[in-house]
Length: 204
Image (cartoon, rainbow, N blue to C red; front, side, top):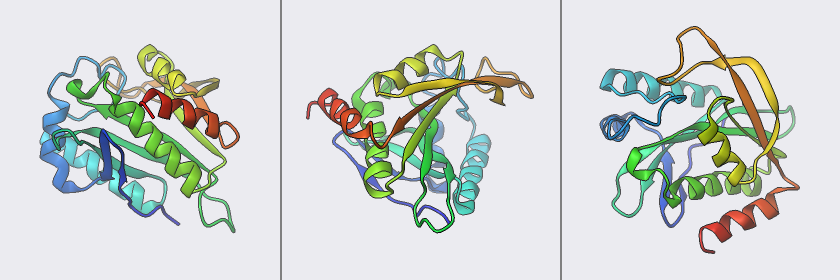
């Protein structure tokens, strides 16, 4: 089983299915300013971005991921990526009981704008209201204070730290080394209040 590609549209950002045709625009977005990619995998060459896209599309075909590009609606520019990953499937259930939101990066000129908040709202709304998941996980490098603060602002509850859990990434990462992962989640019981707060932050 796999999640079918879909487009999610808000007022500030549109999440569109990732496609190889996005390679050049994503390379441009990734190279505007790389100072904040200390813990994040953001390819910066055409070859690396093409491999990144191929890998994500293979994961989508396998049913574990559903990747998106983030398009800023104000000017139509691609400004990053995000995705569902670690999609969990239960026998006899047509939609997943759990997804993780992650693999998120934004170009420097799209950071600290409403785009990230609205993208999370779109992904959470689709997960809870269309897929009817029980739980959405959001994980990050435990050392990434900026990312952890952003997850907490949108309503994620810290479940714990998994030690030596995933590959170390970003400019401060080391190839072949493991990182500690901070695991956050939002449950279906929490979703109505979390969603209301996010919509309020976005001005309705």
